[in-house]
Amino acid sequence: MQKYKTKKRFGQHFLHDQGVIKKLIYEINPQTNDNIVEIGPGLGALTFPLLEALSTLHVVEIDRDVIARLKLKNLASLQIHEQDALAFEFEQLAKDAVFRVVGNLPYNISTPLIFHLLESASQISDMHFMLQNEVVERITAKPGSKTYGRLSVMVQYYCETEYLFFVGPESFSPPPKVDSAILRLIPRKVFEHKADDEKKLASVVAQAFSMRRKTLRNNLKKLISNEAIEHLNIDPSARAETLTVEDFVKLSNTIQ
Ligand code: SAH
Image (cartoon, rainbow, N blue to C red; front, side, top):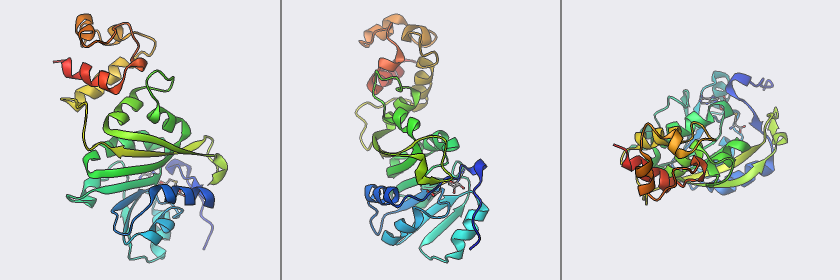
């Protein structure tokens, strides 16, 4: 087959490191009847090892050239969805059942894609993603750390998060300019701290982190009074990066 020329605009960095592929498949631990959807299969670095274990695999891919190559394999077990993953309606794959998500994501769309998937979180049993290392660090960061922010709070509200392992640029062709890492997300089935209105939670979190160096009192002054913050046992002179997810839920549930 002709050598494939990768496209920058689709964030194409193909995994070729067999050690990394094995480790990732081991972490995913695919079971024959799992309902798995892979985002951005590319030339199939993860797709083919996954298919060895599965009876069916759904893939969502935007690039026609890549799709043409996958189709040449003529695999009945491979269900190809030619679409932008950002617009893909993931629920349709499972009807009332659950599904799992995997992917070596195009880094330029990874954050909006994760937010898009969180909308279907109740139907997802887990997600394994290759992402920019810095993004995995932000998503898994704990309160008080420098990288803890809006992304950490919102993803951790919906999911348990786990940094699995680091992957260097040399594992890809062409190598990306950044380091990568594998992230595991497990959507919560039971919420210990549930927001009455998740849209409101998202906007409070966005406001609280809008100016990182300012206090909560300052960033939230249009939404909630000093007294109301104190009433929740939260220090109004603290910065957003020291608050737990539970604190943000409490703040959001207090605002009318
Ligand atoms: N999984 C492969 C390819 C990773 S590169 C591997 O590990 O080698 C990222 C892949 O995502 C590419 O195949 C790219 O074409 C695809 N892609 C980029 N943007 C996309 C989008 N919006 N929706 C679906 N797939 C996309």
